[in-house]
Image 1: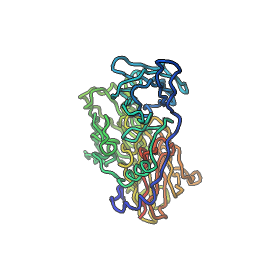
Image 2: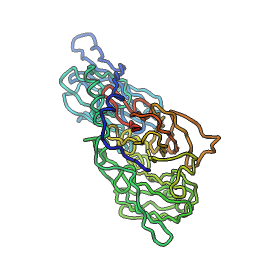
Image 3: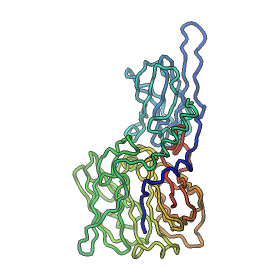
Length: 453
């Protein structure tokens, strides 16, 4: 019995079980003006850089005050932070991992300004934001953006208790919120003799991650993640990838054993697929049942970061995962972790638009986990301990399996975990790097729930 989506009913239970309040950090503060005639008040704002985001994405500051940005590179790559004032672009020096720099920006008029990383390619990968300068000096320096994906800025956020409670409640009451598009739909093959043929098209799309929030994304067959491909060991498979984007691409089958010419690495195993072109990947499935992945391997920081990935599942005979793991499996779910230009997403969506995993009491729940982001994500399930039964497509020997409630999933890793749904209720399931999931305005990003009825 496969139940991939929960009917949006009984949401009052969510309010009772998930509403919580959080308070903002206090790292940023209004600086005091220098002594003497003609001195100018200053506002201090903390900024964090990572792959590939500027946090806060939207910064609020008062007009008429000089701005001092304390910028820290919390990522692994080189980054800068710059403010485009309309007259000039004021930028920090290039910052390495752990470096901190101060950027002084003179007083600006009330308006909307752009913030950006000036390192080549990083703006396209998502390192762009907004500086909102308001005439009201009570503007929240460093407040989170309207879409909630603010990250950990440490900047002061002025919210009342009532506002914090209302923000948390609003998100929970709308979960699971409806949005355009859904990833992971199973792709049916064209069966031609003894060959299963799958057609994938790489496209540039506008993707709705949560109600009203659209991002520039890239998807296979128009979705993030792309459709799920399911095959069996011994199948002869053909995957035809057509490129309808404005830049070249390739496809790599991550973790799949292939002939070298099918590996999808540009100018090593194949020429890139040009815009308007196609390439056919053909091979026999020799790997054991488990979760594998397909994703772009051209300009992959941008292309994978924007959503060019999907699951390649080698199923056990008759789709019987219970026979593989020695446990009954009633519910099967695939969960992709993503970050970067699309925000902090699960299957391409941010809370409250993420889809819960639905089960009945006593069900065995199998979750295929994959991280195609650039950051590590420790996935934590409330109320349960789950059993880790497979890693990178290989079933673990029963003596090597282990119980956990938080599982660290590094970029490129896949795990299968089993949950015995013994406890009624709505149980939060989220990344435990807290800036990826919750702020004073409520929950956002990498949050979903296991719903047991």
